Image (cartoon, helix red, strand yellow):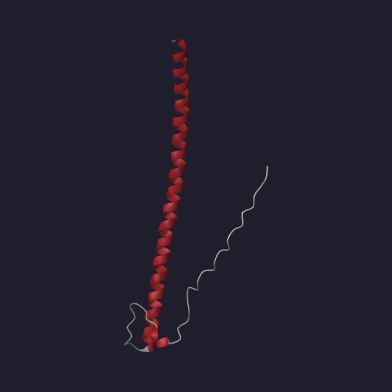
Length: 102
């Protein structure tokens, strides 16, 4: 028995996700009032970040609840399949006995 080692291509690096802007005035933030004072803009950005974090947290909670439900129902389904299997096994034995008679 021989094993062949296949040479794999190297995985390319991911491109950088963020690059600092060379011109800070070119940065745009959706929902930001650019006519407001700098301190008000900072407050708005802080609120936007907080809102996004709250949404992510809520989605995470929903995902966890869904996952817990999936696990709970999987256990219930497993029990149903086990019950059905044992029922089928006893019925199969009965059918085999009947078939052997004829």
